[in-house]
Image (cartoon, rainbow, N blue to C red; front, side):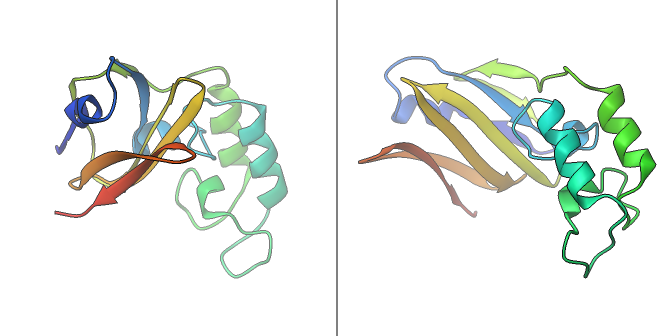
Length: 140
């Protein structure tokens, strides 16, 4: 299983930060928008894509929680069953075991929202910009 090294935060943050790591396993429980919270927003996204398949205008691959190529009742039930759950949180610096596939790191630093999407096995680098901090991914 790949390891996500959150020590990179120390190069740009003068203090420790708390972040959530959203993995494919957590997403499949109902976190359609990959924000680390399974809530009504996720159910709304499933509802908007309900009864769709790839190629249709309302298709949303993130709402296909069971990966069967259709947005059906099973996706709604999975999301509803897990309402209120949040992704695990970690304080930097730390290392986190993550499964292969898409992962998202979300958090807040000085009222700036952090979000970086990456594929497990890449190096994640966070940089400051004039608008705040944004994640950048460098493939290794």
